[in-house]
Each structure stands twice: as C-alpha cells, then as structure tokens.
Image (cartoon, rainbow, N blue to C red):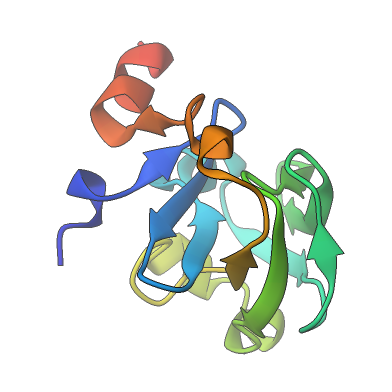
Length: 126
C-alpha cells in the first residue's frame, strides 16, 4: 500500500490518513528517521478527546524525547497498543503497522486546510 499518495502531513511531522469515518494518525517516516531507535511511547486512552494542536502522545528515542501533536480535533476510538509494548516497531514501519491512534474527527473540514500533501511535506524538508 502506498500511503504517501493519500496522507496529509503537519509541519511537526505527524501524518493523517482520512478514512470514511475515522482518521488514522501517526508519525512520518522522516520523523522516525530523525528520532532514531524508539525506546518508549506513551499513547492516550480510547475515549480521550483532543483539540487540533494538543499534545496527545509522547515518544522517546535513544536521541531525544518529543511530544506528538493532534493534527485535527478528534475523539480517540482506537489505540495501537502493540506499539506500547514494542515501540521499536515504529522504526520498521511508521505507516502500515506503526500508526498511533484512530480518531473520529470532531472539527470541521477547515481543520484540514493547513495540512500538507506528502510531496509538499517532502519539499518543506529540503
């Protein structure tokens, strides 16, 4: 599956994949590459609600600790709990199996307007 055609990215390196009812949120391959080996991940609980821009998770690697920001307002409906026990899975695949949470969007379409396509995101990095 080629996620890069469908995902939208934030300047803070989160990605969002819009589905029919749910949005899948994770960290871009670039962010994971910059962090290096992931050693710890703290994720929210199902039912938690966040506004766009809120910190919803924390990640630690051998290089750094970072906060992860919610790209849209939403309610957490699923958490990738496998990553809590094995955060290093993110180093292998941050898209297919390395998504962080699935949310039900609670904001309006306007919240998507400042997100970048994957190619725009890659250009921003250059």
